[in-house]
Image (cartoon, rainbow, N blue to C red):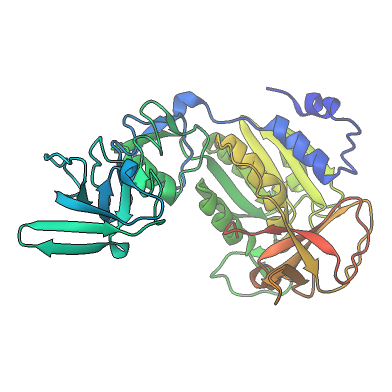
Length: 427
């Protein structure tokens, strides 16, 4: 396990008082490691949503298990088709889904077939029933297929065209989505091996922070950060250890950090890392662990602490509500995903035309709350949510993404394209 000094020494131009967003990402990539594979567990499929696969899911069967019909219609041998002539075939019987048809289809015959039913070996094409004409004369039924409608192999699903037996259906590191659960179930697998949930302890710091239920007092604010971080962690699939609000008292802070380090894989705090704030939190972080304090070239969210206390990774976030969410999305979320064993890649940023001019200084990355919509011509456009103060919590509710103005970027004119990091259900 590398020390913070070792990581810093390997980063070109590392300066804790002036870190770029890219340098922070590079640092955290070396600080965080996936959970041990030995701690993986098998869970029932109904309990697996949102979990991270600890090993590949190998298909025990081929999907589909047989050549079968992709629709209701009439199966036949396409070698009988003539380019410009309708094809009339005698109906030999009906094949239903769920069991093999036991009869025989001879030349000049076809088989009525339902969606999903097994195709007999000598039949390779299915004509949709709505395009065919059926004629009955006493005991003989014929089916006429119009010309130029089909080619060989149409409306047929091939054995194993989705998955072949022994093939990896899903790979270790994938998050289990609703679609993934359906895929696993289609293989007949009742449970799946996943990483255990990442345990994350969280608390707010500061004498000015009130818990819900307390009577309002002058100069104090209710703790919104705790509930925001709880939601962010829960949506990520973490096991959240809520430790409430911790006052700016050395003994209380030391006890909170010690308890969190014993219980959790990661610790998140908000407040107490800015210049000019009560330094008890910083002092206690440094006393108990290997911790660095950064000033990041970004807005909002300049101050941040990072390191380890015991075996737990520490993220000390700013106290302002918007800064907490921005730093979480930009830095903490990718780091926690790595610790969870996830192979998820950052979602690609959208490009959208800006509907208003934006002032921006080169030399820092700015994240402005924005709302992306479709223009009449179908292209994407984005506007800000207005006041971009780091305490304007309502802006994160009104927006659906963050306009990312990169480190070297300057002012933005109306109509310029900008990158947008969409919230995508993370917030």
